[in-house]
Image (cartoon, rainbow, N blue to C red; front, side, top):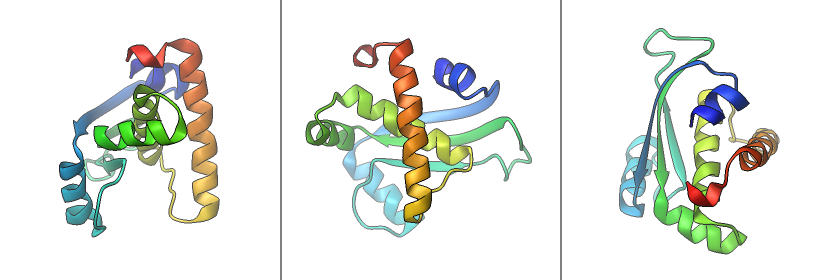
Length: 129
């Protein structure tokens, strides 16, 4: 996490929780907070603006669904650890202001996600995470 935040994103100050949950819990969160039925890979809650922090201080929670990571890893022929790293990166990008609500935003976010994942792969063995 430190490598990703400090070395790759240049963020020195943060208060971020990462919660690993199952499909049932992520589905409950998805319905409760986004009014979307069913499972998803990652849900991010940004508290930076609510607590008065701004700029280079990130404050939030990232909920990552382990069941989704395992299923998607098989689908995309990668490891579940790489999928987990991708989901954490995705959540961090949301905290940094990226959005994926429309195709243009989604493409921009995906490009940055891929770039960061590749840089992270160069610095550590994701299979050992």
